[in-house]
Length: 421
Image (cartoon, rainbow, N blue to C red; front, side):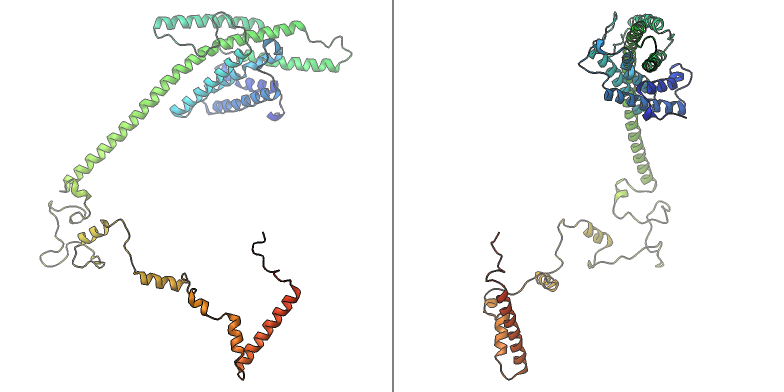
């Protein structure tokens, strides 16, 4: 049963990832296979998780030096290098996809160099912290640079093999995996020593510690040298891909221009074949013709000599424009003013708004001279001897009684809340 990734320690996670990647770095499988590409994507996710674990655990700090890094922690300096190596083997989707892959790989390589420079990693002869080494343009200089690079890497591989006991042929990933596995073994041994109190000693073997640190320094020196070569190769490939991308863009524009010219030529030829000139094909009402084309290259008449129509047609309404041809009517509808003409008079508009209730009437001096509701009620109640007067009198009595009860239970001005904050 596979152990969940979230429950793995940092060494266990890196060990599992690199063990799965060994066939890829030993050139035992092809990176063009879909399952291998999926393996690379999964490995990149694990390496990103490993970098987050390193940051969370505070394994490295800008305020430290090489002496402050533990012997078993030095191998974690190579995590960015591993990410760059795996990323460079991912297949991009087209030119732009490949450019994106190389740029991510370049950024990881540069992060690895920056980390070594931060800790003032001891350099060997001919090594620098700088970025990619420029490739000489002349063939002789390029050949000498390759020979020098090959000899330097060969000497460093022999030194790493002597210190780790792992033979390095092409990639340094097996040596990194060996150091990580040693870290796991040392942790297990230390745990067992703490548990076995009756044991002779619980201290870590100083000779093994020294050999681990020496092997890690030799391995990082090899990775530093290979990083410069990888960055130079990436720069060269990026220049080629960007040039190819620009060429592909230019070719695409050329194809579009040729296609537009072809359509334009075809349209002109079609106009000449049907007897139309170029400007006539864009007119509002092209001349009527027989069927779908021409007959003898002549424009067809709408009605023949016997009064029968030569082809179907539709009589359009004049829309109030009498004595105008169809062409003049359509022209008058197209070439009109930019403003909207009024469709009703002002009186019609006011009448429509009044019907909708949008116009308020009343007010002014006439409204001041009109009686209020209370005054009108008192006036109507004074007409004695009529039924309406008695009803109005009763309404006035009820209203006065209601007001009297209100004044008994409310203080004067209690209902006036204006200007009281």
